Length: 73
Image 1 (tube, rainbow, N blue to C red):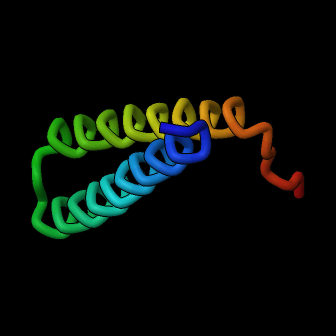
Image 2 (image 1 turned 180 degrees about the vertical axis):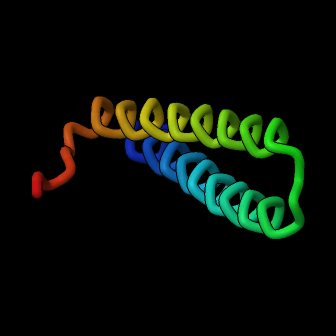
């Protein structure tokens, strides 16, 4: 497997992390509308935080492996 192929696989995994985050936000929205326990919402927010951390780590490795950096805004 080449570095580019590995970076592509990492990017796919990162996409999955982002999709998971999206799903968790939808879950929180539903939970709030249905008066779910605050502890549940807090735990889902913690899961989101973990997923965000995973996404940052994966982005770091794509950048490190390819040398391609995101544009600065």
